[in-house]
Amino acid sequence: MNPQVDEYQGVLAAASLAAGEFLQTLPTRAAGATARGASAPDFNTPVGAEAALAEFRARHEAAMSGSAGPRYWGFVTGGATPAALAGDWLASVYDQNVSNDIGSVASRIERDTVAELCALFGLPDDFGGVFVSGATQSNLTALATARQSLHTRIGIDIAQRGLGSAPPLQVLAGAAHSSVLKAMAVLGLGRDALQPVATMPGRTAVDIDAMANALAARAGRPTIVVASAGEVNTGDFDDLAALADLCAEQGAWLHVDGAFGLFAALSPDHALRLRGIERADSVTVDLHKWLNVPYDSAVVFTREPEAQRAVFRASSAYLGDSTDPLHYTPENSRRFRALPAWMTLRAYGRDGIAEWVQRDCTLARAFADGLRGIDGIDLLSDVHLNIVCFALRDADAATRDRFLDRLNRDGRVFMTPTVLFGRPGIRAALSNWMTQAADIEIALAAVRDALRD
Image 1: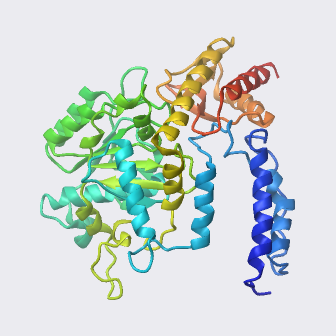
Image 2 (image 1 turned 45 degrees about the horizontal axis):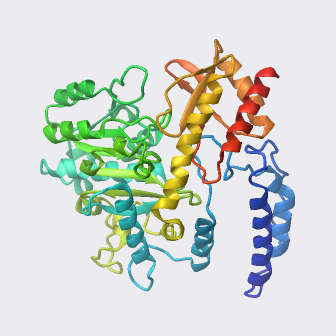
Image 3 (image 1 turned 90 degrees about the vertical axis):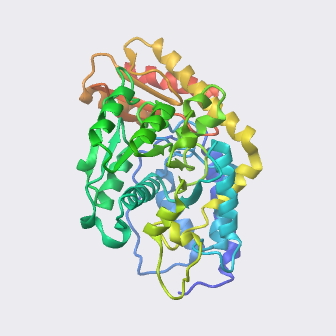
């Protein structure tokens, strides 16, 4: 059975109906799914597009989580605003390969979107940016660019000559995200090249004096400092201005991982935490977090696009020597990820996005305040942005896991486990545009009920 052009109308209408029904249930749908779905069908017996959609819904839709809804607080997970979802659907319809500037306006739309994001986050005009899939690819692109730049300063073109031609490079960080370690492994730097630097007491932000000592010990050798703008466990911020001073003194590259914390720029209560971001050499942000566009969507910004191009340049007679986007990312072929972001920025503007960012921060503090009133619960950290970490008093990891299983199985809310300052804990990250004050009361009731079970 081959696809037919006249299939589009029927299956897209059915898909639109399915989407509408699913989205309508998000506020009440189980935040985390417990069903596993049915077994696989006989893929050797084709049934056509509409029948395949109907079968998928019957087999698997009930096992889909409400991860795009208001009380999915695991990891750092956004949702999809109406404008973003429309943009994402049309990105699939248009099916543009945003690899070059020839034959489509898509790459120009990406550049316009990147420029607006730079302005939104307070990054200087000399930053270049490209869309990638998420934290791993954005951190990989930034670290590869940093390595190229640092070694070029000592006369080594590592992109051309390879790792064996260069002295070892070290990465210094207080609390690096796991994607940084993954990127280091992929790049051949090795996970052992990460030197953890002490954080401040009771915080996950790096101790500036400890970082100064670590940088001084490097004595001018190639070094990357990875700073957190919204550390993933607690939402804490490194002192970016102080780190920029240190990196300037020592000739180190300052990379800021701002996966969700970069959106603090839109919050009057938190914008000052990003003071110094404009002096970074590279910055990353995940848009499928707080911008609430569908997965996958991230942007990597760098101050040295020429070093970035040296790493990712694609050489071929049919590609030419252009400034096409494919020369700046690990992928040659890329989906039109900029369209959902463009739609979101245009539809809601800075003030609209700022409203849900500020609301999530306010609600995170309200959730923490509510937890303080529950006997047997301890907060593990201040609420620095939009993340709340708490623990059951005197509970080991096994007790924590049993409690969390009860909490998540209930379906009213979904959270994830963590360990903070040596204590097994539970972590809630609020980054959905739908979340409201009523959701805090629902979540607190779920916590109390799970404690009683």
